[in-house]
Image (cartoon, rainbow, N blue to C red; front, top):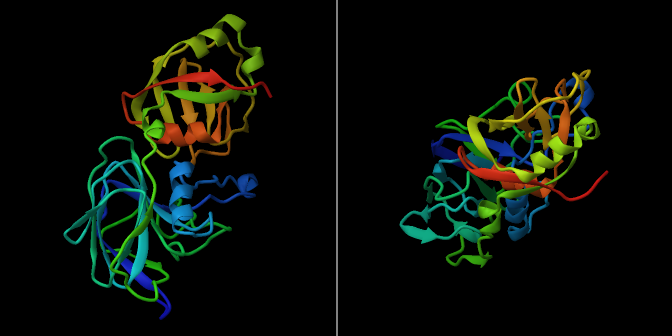
Length: 290
């Protein structure tokens, strides 16, 4: 660690944590996914309230928070899914900038609703940048997920502050909204018009098959489309498999795919979907035609 850096020790890693920023771009021709924060809206809010650069790296935690010790003064914030935030014996709300001192312990509970939590620090976590991004991805970065005993470097605040400041109310719409705004996918025009209308008229539920690469929906949907050659796909692309399963690609998704691309989620819809859990209901709403 450099003398100018502080560090945060991971005491309990929770279920699944990764360092994320806005992602890495320009390497799809090498088969490298974009990665980046799943809930970009909450990630950007963390950096905004900390007065960081929008691309500063945050820690993304899934479902379960964790326990961390700061070995140097820092200014931090928790955004995303509502959790119980405790620094030593004092409780705070999420979306609330907090000043911590050397030796302070941060505890984050499992989520109350939603799915993903963001822990931001003033100046961003100072982990290694590879191919223009600090986002962790297996095979690209040294670390692929958070583990007990890790230390994450940051730029320490010049002094510890006793007061906390800057907070905003929790946006419940991000966790309660069931309608996802979408554009027609590349193969949408080849679908039977009646089937496409059915796709937009019915509800779907998230299955247990989900991670940062993609989310499979529980219900099957009729597939009358021809097979396609492998073609580009992006975070938010909705694919329809030969067996009738809908798969929504997320931030760690591959860069090409061979299933018909019938819808494309908006960026806001990707953030909304990333805060859903198994069994949650969604529906699609067409917002425009290309």
